[in-house]
Amino acid sequence: MQNEATSLGRKICSSVEKHPLATIAVFILLTLGPFLDKPFNIDDPLFIWAAQQIQSHPGNPYGFDVNWYGTSRPMWLVMQNPPLMSYYLALVAGLFGWSEAGLHFGCLLPAMAVVLGTYKLAKNFCRWPQFAALATLFAPGFLVSSTTVMCDVSMLAFWIWAVVFWTEGVKQNSFWKLSSAGALTALALLTKYNGLCLVPLLAAYGWIEKRAAGRWTAFLLIPVAALCANEWWTFRLYGQPHFFASNQYAQAHQAFHAMAMLFKALNMLTFTGGCFAAALFCAPFLWRRRVLLDFAAAAVLFTALALAGGMATKEFPWLAGHHRVCAEVQIPFWAAGGMCVLALALGDVWQKRDSSSWLLALWVLGVFGFAAFAYWMVNGRAILPMAPAVAILIARRLEQNRTALPAGIKFALLACAALSLLLAQADFRQAGTARESAEQICTRYAALPGRVWFEGHWGFQYYLQKSGALPVDFSRSVLSRGEIMIMPSDNINLSAPNVSVFENVAGLEFPAFPWLSTQNAFTGAGFYGASGFLPFVLGPVPAEKYFVFRVRQTVSCAP
Image (cartoon, rainbow, N blue to C red; front, side, top):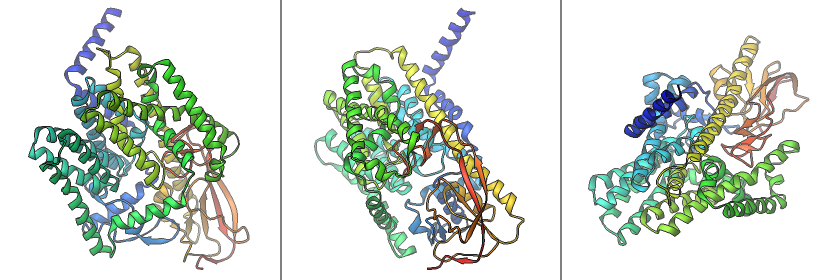
């Protein structure tokens, strides 16, 4: 029996080596397939509503109003991303419908493109491209992002293939590869404006590789031209260039969410370490014991200094008690992981000093710096673009003085995969509470006379509106006596109801994942931003609560 098992294992390993791309594709399907029915969550509704608009008005993707921040505003002011992802979702919906499973199935393609693109790039940069591809797939930041229908993974798909074609095109002076890279960079930019960061990265690589400007610089004008065309088009449609409006929004919210520099740097380290956990799990095989102890000591000291100033209490006043202690204890662990990521980038360029090491270092450090000091909010989506570079850097570090991957690395990657799958399941369950609550609330109160109102947004808003409920507009809504108003406990843009006007008649609770959270203000988890120290928190998770109010007397929200 043991001989048969050994023989089967050798056959599987042989098959993986002979058919790496097919093997990686199977891993992607097996990993993401269970999450196809995930309820829409966070900003998913914005992309879906724009896609629905595109099906009826393809030339005007943002030509409608939406109540997302508590008042009805034009969609082009609310949506801070270009519309290419919504055009793709409109196409997917035309083929598979608007169900969760249909749209998530369409989003498997960008996820697969990212992982296969990492494999392709890693083949040129290291000896173990399969490891780099799987380390990307099993990065918590990538896996959780791949269970949404937002634009982040699609932007990264264009990003990674632009780098693949650019690095090969610069070395080979290939016209079609350089032009393909320019076009893919333009598509990345038109999927999410963060894709603009690709332009200086590719320019830096070209300069380092060629040591002089050449015809390769002309291809970087393609994304610049695409951005200019987008600005002209949106100016004609809405009276203001969209990228310009998005930049104004980011600057305003960056001031609103301003943190002390030291605390924000710690926040970025913890998000980097958590979202790319493989760097920490593989650390015993990457660094000497003394270096690991230095990382641990530095992380503890940095955490103590950052928390001592009271900035954490100022930024997250709602986080208290054992939940705060639980989150603070985990900060040094993932901060050390963030230090490992930065050390990988700096160490690689220090040792090799070639164009590929400079590319990877600038890639990681550039995304880190942009997310920490230029982007308006620290979150897992902002640092997602560094996922392939981190995975390749780990593979390059592992291959030093080795001819084969250490056996323990497989267990480290397995541990990272297990963590990522648990996080995806926790995120799935969190999103599910919004869908369940909306369905139960509308079933229970739809038969009553009058309208059903609600506060709060994200997936909760999507499913309530789909069932006929109305979002409260704090500038003009009129709620009549006897009508129902629903308010969640953990959401955004909430206004506490006046007890003299609103009577609390019921409270509903829906259990989330019991001991792991990705987005919960009360645990300190803020993968999607705005609510926490960490991208995820291990610890007890309170149930999601929804309060039902009856309007005692007619009230107008108009000022």
